[in-house]
Image (cartoon, rainbow, N blue to C red; front, side, top):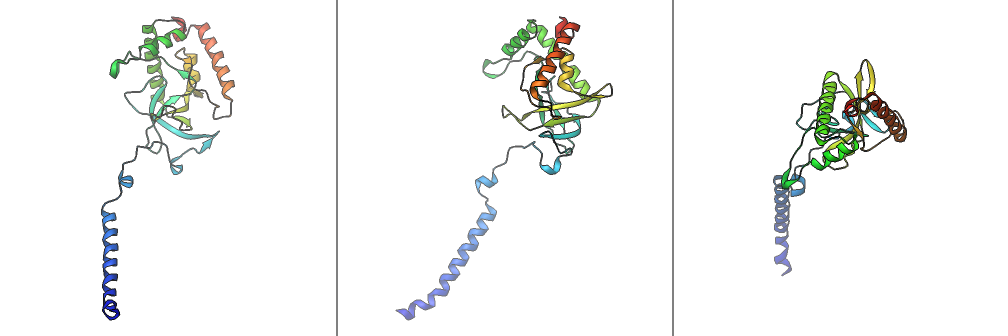
Length: 228
């Protein structure tokens, strides 16, 4: 019986080799579901795509431009980075009123949000709030379209909706300004949304106090909503 089993061993090895080769060929032609699953689009840049490095804990991007997008508004808009990516940004500190009354699925609307904005911006009517929202939208988009601008972001998206908080530095009358400051001066916003330390190191509390001072001046001047 020992003499009869020895000749069979080479055939066993051949069978094993063929099985391994067939397994590898199948895997190559049929990747696993996990590896084949399409990934969600990622607008966060890789280190090689950063053109301004890190400043104050923020990623800095120079010479960005506005993208004409349907959801652009007075305080949120889509921009084109130097590497071609197009994230949607949301300003720190400020909130412009909605620029239109909208209805969504399941009977939901933005009417309650507009009413809250109107109440906090001098108890104006919802219709007046929407008009201020439209004025803010036209002003912001015209300003961003007029010159390239710089953005500073940590890529935080609190609602996980691919909208990222950012500071936007623009040129106005030959000077560099933070966009949220200009909007407060114009009387187009309420000081409402997430605060943060500025890229230049200014603490969030100090900037918030500065914005409050600008708001007081805007009220005295009757700028924007404060002139209604």
